[in-house]
Image (cartoon, rainbow, N blue to C red):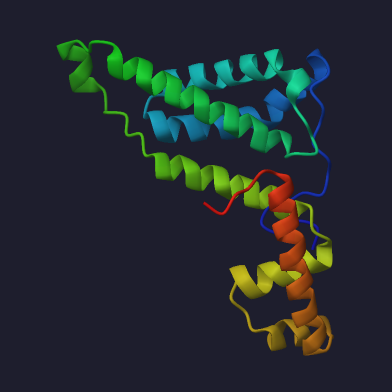
Length: 184
């Protein structure tokens, strides 16, 4: 039950030195590259986006606050900004005829970025819940299982599962508020 939806309970590493930055790079670079590649449709620009992401992270390492979100979430936020910057730069640059025939257009869909970022924020908020509360929420809300079925699986009264749902939602809302989430 420690790894639900890919959620690890290990704390995020700090960015307090070259070794920590190297560890962060080895842990997150591939995923950031895939994220950038999906949005930019260009492997070269995606590599540039990952490099720029880690450069900006290194420069702003003193501003990283582990209590506000995981290192992964912070890096993806930086990467999102880098992708937008690169896409804008590419859109302004005149494209030569031979280049335009070989290159796909960059599609910037703000909703897609926002949903991706919100998903990462939700993942981080779920990490902050207790294992029992997280499990009940995932099973009843995300997997849409009835509380009675989850209660039978856990060997608990249904009322206990419903109580965990209630308190898990309260804790989730608090965690999201602490991370700056707004109900816009």
